[in-house]
Image (cartoon, helix red, strand yellow):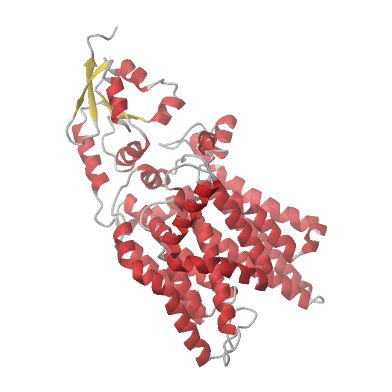
Length: 514
């Protein structure tokens, strides 16, 4: 019979997935969402840092989920499954940290229905896989920690020691997958290293094991990253970002060179205030419990506090100084760790209630304990109060179930363009057009020139592309700012096509053009 932990984990997964599916984007999106829906289906390459683990998983999921709708919906559904999986797996993590099953379930539901977690569960997003891998990595580290303690308790049994070694190697393999999915994983390195050395200080005297773990992590990541040069080179995909088939182009993708200018400064006070506002939106009044919970965690589980505390600190400092769209998703890891501190604290409270039996070392209880169940139920319900109070507003904010604007825009744009047209677009609208053309097979006659295309093919500025094509084919432009269109009107005659409103037809040169 499944344990209470397993049943609650499955229930959390199911509840989260039902909520995500009910509020899920039904079709194609814009911006990175459409790229996440397009590239995996083509087994192509994505913008830096390439995200090959997500691309490969997305390709496989696109086959498995084929009965559930078109490609766009399948990729949205994959994100829902991954985000719900992170919620369900967090139950197991919180149990290992000492939280009773009901408390672990309540905290996991609150975590799964936090705004940023909910957001990545309703549309295609690489951060959904990143979150699941962070939770899994944490679980494996805790499992390895328990195996090391078992080995210390059984010094005469070499099999127990070998079991611990296998856990650390397995953890390294998952870390390699996580690195190949999102570079944010690298911010966990100091915390992981501190946790490992604090758990087993003598590990450095075992170079073979250390090299094996490092080799597995690097090997798994490298193997997955081979997808970029292979699909950009000898087995070229229909959609490739940059030039990862060359050493310099691959390096540019790996280090995300084009985004390095997005690291910005700013006053520490303003950055801290913005972080507090974000945390309050996720945690509600429980935000004020988090600092206390971390102190309790540091006292009761110092190695875990070292790992998670460093992870939160480094990630928050990086995210606070990085200026990019939807940067709130970078705080998914810190949000998970904050909830884990609450789990430790509530577990300690329950363990000290008179008449309750503490958990075993593996987080289970020998038999039913009415007092423990009652206290856990009360505290679990209390922890869910902020989520219950805010659920209606969160539902409204995250609900994309009726959002068909981009699908309608795509239909209008494709209908408006003349045969053999060239359209000069920018990222948010290039990606849905790629989806329509390369995945759905619509309008193969048009050429989509993105800002990245202009760079890779040395096409020059927007005006240069127009000048090179205006005498040979119909030319359209989609620009971010109206001022960009106005600037082009100094050289070209530009007319709005009417619907969609941000698509402009370049009909000729102005009389003043040389």
